Image 1 (cartoon, rainbow, N blue to C red):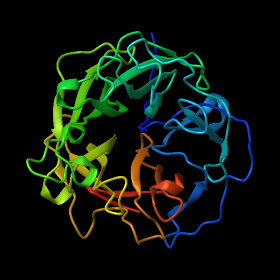
Image 2: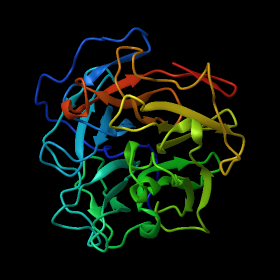
Image 3: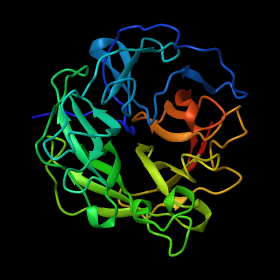
Image 4: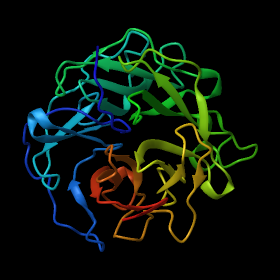
Length: 331
């Protein structure tokens, strides 16, 4: 039986420590609670997890730098080292082996890794897969079959785990509707606009055996632009907070926001201005911030933003320290 300790990520979550140098940077932000880039190489969709037995933080990220799932480590949450290790050297049999395009990995404690990769059945879309390891560092061994696909709706991406206070486990993910869009911003700026719902699936103690049916807990609306994505779900003092990004990741419209509910299945209410979005381009010297992962108690957050003037310069990792009061989150 696998015991969990979930995090959310969007293609980056695991193991440890080989310092390749030059990856920490001074705080260039305006708020003391937002720092970065703490990883100043391409490290998109970061997921973070604290592992007490290692006395270390681990961050996982989308494919890049020659590996399927990137891994970084930190002793203090401030100074990070990216390893050359591939946390997921082998992908599931369902994946297009010639072009796996692994996205948004997310580890869960002892240890389950959720990831999205190109489907061999339909290489135009991604499915969500699961891999397991006895060690947070991996290597993770993939399950042969995908966890969820929804190929007819555009695929499934951005998985993240969630620990319910009653001990039950859930996985959240996005149905990638804009992948079947009609063009424009993130392929979903031209009518008719496709739905990009965030789904919630209860799972057994192994982290991947489904219990019951998936439930839709959020979707885009006109205020979100072409999509919502990159869910990260936590619970603090009886309130569930669902972090998500809206806008388009390849444009400066990308941001970080959140919704809240008093039940894990909702209904969720999106936070609106002036308290949301939490992160936008032009503030804290950030460009296209989003795709965040929050730790289980909401005390820390990691997200990516552009390292240069556009997405071609790569996306590094920043960190933030949230404050939560009732249903309000501030950074």
